[in-house]
Image (cartoon, rainbow, N blue to C red; front, side):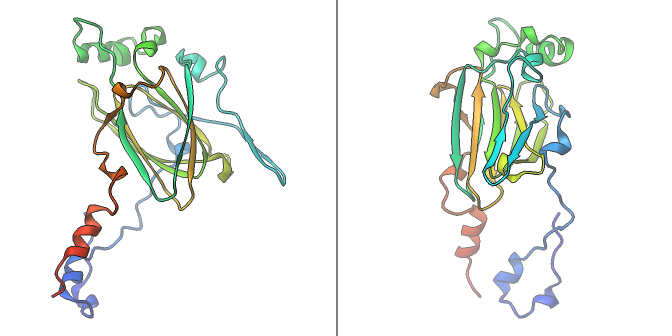
Length: 234
């Protein structure tokens, strides 16, 4: 819970503003992708480091992934479509979620238990060609990424972390693999535009593009700001 400011310290403000006050917790730090790389908090999610080469006085060159080398070769995941996207600085998108494939007559919870618990080392049984997996790479900007496991019978784990774009340097560029059934949202964590490239295991299908709490993509102002602006000034 956020600490409440000392009312006496703020006695020069009107009551409505004082009642709305809260203090920032400066001890909170959102982890970077490098802090969680290789830590599979959500089954199927993978965060992996990439190589980016700075080029003096010219820019940079970054490898995305090689299909015949880890991690994609180990996963047996070969994207069939590549796309790009730009997100303006200070904006957000999502949550997006893609429907996981469930074999006919199979209990969803039992199916996921087989894929990610009982036979988790066998990547050949993952139905990449029947559900959309995303492999994301961030070329420019700083992204805050939030993932939520919404698959039936799986623990509802949440991952929240920053991913550096290739242009930021420092050797902190990472790729992110996101399975179907894992809701994902992102927002620019700086004033800089975000440019991303991503591969998918299936071609784009609007019917497989689910949205959860995505009104942030349309809202002019956050709800908390609107409530504050609408408050009476007593």
